[in-house]
Image 1: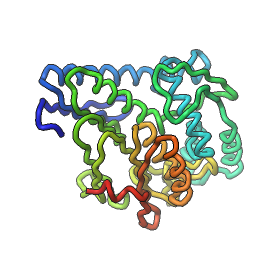
Image 2 (image 1 turned 120 degrees about the horizontal axis):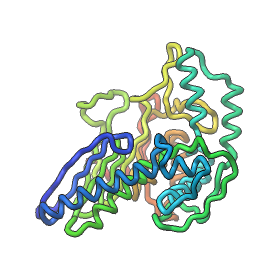
Image 3 (image 1 turned 30 degrees about the horizontal axis):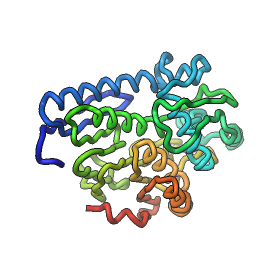
Image 4 (image 1 turned 60 degrees about the horizontal axis):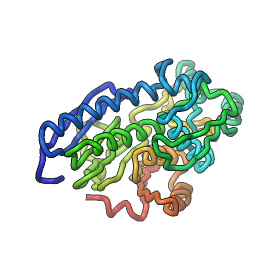
Length: 321
């Protein structure tokens, strides 16, 4: 962190369904206050645009076929379409029906009918929409054409939208006069930009507690960090516990991995890749993610398997402090 300037740290909740933390450095108090107000205003606008709980949000209206995707939602849908194709379905924002089947199972005490799971998975395997252009990095304001192929009412972008929002908030803060450094944390999705570095504690998924010593501490500069884990939220069906992270290809909760942390250039990418890593596992994810470098996406990661073994990318250890 720069020695000069005024540091300002704030937290709000609920914002976008979670907590929002802002840590920034600016030339003086007025610049810091202006940047803080700008971030809060941008967060509220994103919440109104991307909320799946509000029938009037851009996301809800587009999902229901009542509106076109605008300059914020369109690029986000374009990114989502690209990641769905790239991951061969490991990332899929239409898993709401699978989640509902497991919620019913939790209430009844019996696992979902395999035939019902297979039916939903077959439906998910067919793209519900396509976007043009589609790419892993599509900027806000890009004119995106969306073509629907199926009902999009169950669309849930939570595995990319939170990271996408973090990126928009970081950009909003850095665009303010006098701001030299910013960190935004939305529900555990973090991104740093500007001067200095960001240190992030990576919790031990087998020893979850708010005051536990992190299993690792990493330090990054101008990058984002996201973690996908199963320890804090689970389905309980009968006497068995299941991850709430469901593999869209099988309809069953992920069991082989219990946590995945990804460091990427932006928070939306880190968000998606943490989910994909959890679904694919270390061997398949290592192969897939290696190909991202040619697209300018350098990602480092650590996966914790159910047996407790940690599997890391070649660059992970260089981040540990």
